[in-house]
Amino acid sequence: MSLETIARPSPNFDSRKGPPDMIVLHYTGMQTGQAALERLCDHQAKVSAHYLIEEDGRIFTLVAEERRAWHAGVSFWKGERDINAVSIGIELVNPGHEFGYRAFPDAQIAALIALLDEIRGRWEIADGRIIGHSDVAPDRKDDPGELFPWARLAAAGHGLWVEPPASPGAPLTIGDEGAGVFALQAGLTRLGYDSAPSGQFDDKTAVILKAFQRHWRPERIDGIADGETRARLVHLLRAGS
Image 1 (tube, helix red, strand yellow):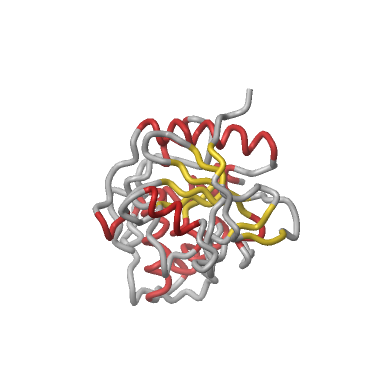
Image 2 (cartoon, rainbow, N blue to C red):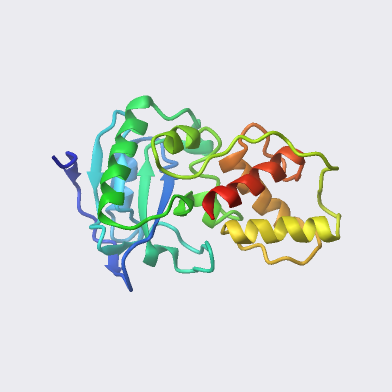
């Protein structure tokens, strides 16, 4: 039995170059779900997603999965720069940081998990390719944000999550350089971020590290690679290999 959805077709799509192998999660960042739906279906806005999930769990279908929706913008993950071409975009109704960011209701997350069950039954999508908008565009986006329950998603079988003990070692931060920084950048790159190793901990590294923390270490988003942050990165790489 297929999941019940509400059709709300968007004109904002084009053709794909191949099957989708990634899922990108967003929050709408608007004051109401209705306002978000209207924008995603406005041809002048030139934005869209494949699905929108309301806080009460209703799922709206906007663009067919076989089509390329316009949700990621300038982005990068694991060498891919046209994220729209290879991904399915899912918008979760939430006012976001600008309009009163809040926790995602249980009904909404339950609907998302059910939707992911179905999507991954149709397409081959690895856990390491279920990510947030802030992961693919760390210099522009914060969504779905630090309140999104990635651990609950992973417990349901979707995405990566680890909670290892912290490893020893001095924190790495802006201005540091050397082998430790090189290894950190190499690990972030292997996970998927656009973080080519240079051995120099610069502003870009800090921005990417904040995106990593927002997803996998939301209790502390400071762009500093302390022992816990580095331990989570190492264990995520092991889990996703």
